[in-house]
Each structure stands twice: as C-alpha cells, then as structure tokens.
Length: 145
View 1 (cartoon, rainbow, N blue to C red):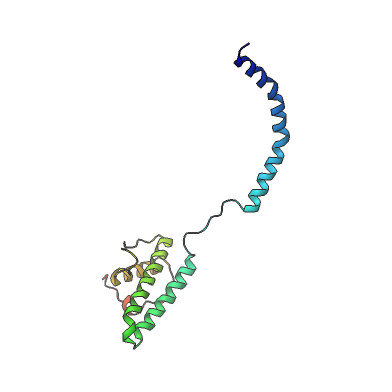
View 2: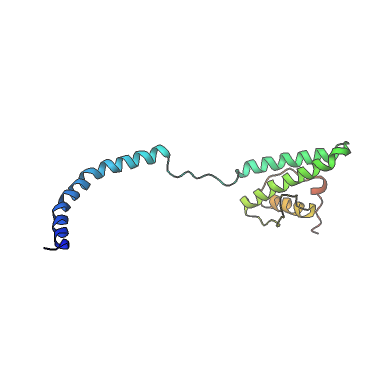
C-alpha cells in the first residue's frame, strides 16, 4: 500500500467526525461573530465634510467678520486679517460648493481665491440655494453683466 492510499483512507475516516464537529460548533462561532459585530457597530462611516447647515452658518459668520473688518479704522492690522479671512471664506465656500455640487475654480495651495472668482463662487452658491445674507462690500459687486 502506498502513501496516497493511506492518506485517502485516513481522510475517509476523519471526514464524518470533522463534519459533525463543524455542524455542532458552527452556531457558537456564528453567535460570537454576531456579538462582536454588534459590540463594535460594524464599519463606521464618517462624513468627509461638515453638514451643509454648518457650512452655511460658518460662511455667514466669516462674511460678517469680513464686512466688520472692512469697516474698521485699524488700518495697520486690517491687511493681514483680511487675507486670512478671505482664505477662510474661500475654504468654507469651496466645501459648500462640493456639498452642493457647484462648479468652483481651481486653487493653488491654501491661499484665498482672487476676489472676482470668490465673488462668482458666492453668487453661484446663493443661486443654488445656500442661504447667506445679502452680500455686501467687495462681494456684492457683480461684474458678470
């Protein structure tokens, strides 16, 4: 008798025992898997951006701060703060544009969008249903014709 024949006979004798063990042990294994799945809640999906309501509120707040800064008389710090605020407004407007699927201009780095592009983006967001206060100052002028 060769090794292959002996292996076949051993497999034939062990197969019923293995099948019975799998049938008896499977429910316990499945219960353990279900318990672990419930305990950990399955895969956790996290949103990639804040809700549109929060984006709109942030955008309104930033636009209000920009308008207040433009009205202030402190010229010494107004330039740097204006650039930072416009960069933050650009970030927030681009996030809102992504959420509303509005086309937005390409931007290099983290710098603010140029004022005409930012103005067009804000008007596009308002036209697509984002509720922002009436735009004033540099963002109110509409040179699109």
